[in-house]
Structure formats: structure tokens, C-alpha cells
Length: 451
Image 1: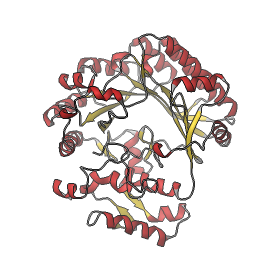
Image 2: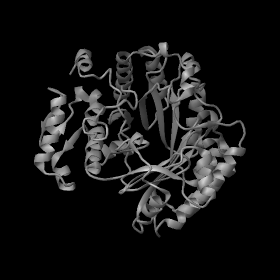
Image 3: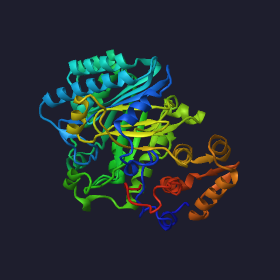
Image 4: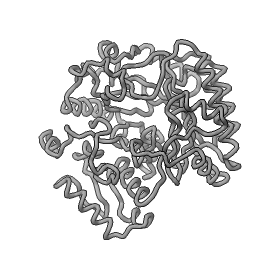
């Protein structure tokens, strides 16, 4: 497993594999989950429980060509102001169904560009959220921040509202790459934003950086990572750029012939990975890095690391609520996704109902397979005792599942101390191993780019 040739033989460079931020993955959702289903699941939350809440703001001042998120461009704040009113109405609906005493273990504003909101909109939105449920003691309030779209006034409002973690999108600091992907954001702008965030007392800073971008070389990604490290982020997500122009039309602006080969992508990842490790960051799962004191590192050492739609998390809440167009909620019963189009979402809320348009009800082996996949993605091992004790499966059945998967990866996986283990050298194959447990992906259909 130490050579590129062995990885190629096992199909790493040809595979298109889900990122497994959920199980089943969103392409397998159906129309069986309705607004009434969503409401009943909310009402079933235990009184006094801690839950997470995701707020989606699908607006950007400019649309970056590399981005495949559900966003829309706007040159004025009028549609954003109208959308905030819709969010407030949706929060009011949520409050009517939410049992008493519920608090928020995590609150995350994502997008799009949440910092596109004017200060008064931010203050109004935060106040409405905390009328629904307060932030629990020790809770985390994080916001995705565009360094091009932030100032002292907005940061002041966010800090006063309780924001204690900021997430900065970097992608790459190279000028040529930024022009090619339609994301102009210099190092100085990013550094100033981070300094301003910390000046407002927000000490926890995340950053996202991409590998596999057009014109990216090992030298260029090395320079970008070194610049990022100079900002001392607490947590870094090193994501692989997924080129899917048939899904995200704006990616047609990016020249396909400038993209690195799959083999070059792996080399780019390794170059960046080594820099984070040399700087004493802990490696978290397949694509995150964190300081020793960050919550992800603490959770990894404690065996409580989890995975959700935002990637790796130390949040152990059973429920993730979601407001805003296209956002996805998770319950012990299943997933519920809001209408993807802002217009359809707004129309439903104005009619006094949730906009839930699709989702998935857990059934059969869903929870068991989901936990196996999560354990592989988080810990690179599946503890057989945990699975047998938690789910309705015999040890013989589980051993058969393990054997079938090991046969697909001969001389790659290992059984150690009653656990299925992905050795360090085989970790580039983690998503492929996880897919082998995916009962909805028997055809191994292409969902997203592999590493």
C-alpha cells in the first residue's frame, strides 16, 4: 500500500465516491418525508434536549466559479432582507413545534455568504434564533465569514450575539489560481479579517483550503499552506476540489485541461498534509487538521468524533435542525430537506408550513451501516463489539460483512482486537472502503470526485 501503483490497482484514481457526510447520501433521498413528517419529528424531540441548528443563507455578492453550493448572486441587499424575514417566519414555525426547554449545543450560519447581511439583519436574526432556543452552556456559535465581505460593524454584532468560532474560506492564495477559479482574495485581506475576528474576542478560527485546483502545483500549494499556517488557524479543512460542471454550470468557466490528474491530486494532498503535520497539527479523519486543544482533536482522542453535513464535528447532539432553502435536518428518525429553490421555500413559509420537499426515513440496516461508515471516516476502524451491542445484528452477520469487504480490498484491511481497521498507508482509500458498506450504492454510481 506504499506505492502509487498499488493505489491505482485498487481503483483510487478512477473512483467517484461520496463524501459520506450522511448515510444514505442526499442523491438517495425521496419524497416520502413531508412537512408534516418534519413537524412530527420536531415534536418528538425530548423536552430539555440539546440540539444543533444550521441556518443557510444562499446569497453571495459574487459567484465563485469553483463553488458547487446552492447560492445566488445579488448586487443589492433587498432580496437578502426579504430572505431574513422568511427565516424569521420559519423560526416562528419551528418554535411552535419545538418542545419546552430545548437549547442549542451548536449554531452554525452557512451559505452562501452569511456575512453579506447588514449588521441590523444579523442582530435581528440572532435575536429571533435565541427566542426559539438559547445557546446551551458551553455551546458553539460559528459563522462562515468571507474576508471580502466583513467589517468591524458586522463582526461587533456577531461577537455580541455570542459567535465564538469563525470559519474562513481561503481556497488558495496564488493569484493565477484565484483568477482561474473566480475567487479574488489576497493574503493581506484574509490576514486582516482574521486579526479583526480575534480582536473581537473570537479566538477559535477555522479555515478551508482546496487541493486539485486548476494550475495548482506542489510548489504553489506549499506556498499557500505556509501562508495559511502563518495565521495560526485552530482547525483546517483540506478539501478536494470536485469538478462537476454538468451539475454546477458556473464551473464551465474553469478550463478542464488545467486541472491536475488524479495522481497529481494525491501528491498535492500529501504536500499540504505534510506541512500541517510538521506544524504539529493533529490529523482528523480524511481531510481535517486541528491544534491539540481544538475540540476536534479532543473528540478524536476521546472516541467521540462525529460526521455531519458540515464535515467533522465534536457535536454529539442527536438532532440537527435546519432552516433556510435547501438545508437538511437530521433526526433519529431520518433526514428532512427544505425546498432547494429560494422561491419555493419562501412560498411554503408564507403559507404557514415548512418547506420540506424530500428526505429519508431510516429503515432496515440504515443506522447500523451509517454508524459503520461514520466510524471508518472518523476513526479508520469499526469496533465489532460496539456494533453488535448497539444494533440488531449478530456477530456472525457482522463478520460476514467484514469478510466481504476485506475480499474487495485484498491485503489492505486488517482485523485487530475485534475491529476492522484501515491501516495508515491505506487511508487514501477510506471513502472507497466506506462505499463497500453502502447498501444504497450497490452500482457504485458516481456522486462526487474522489481524492
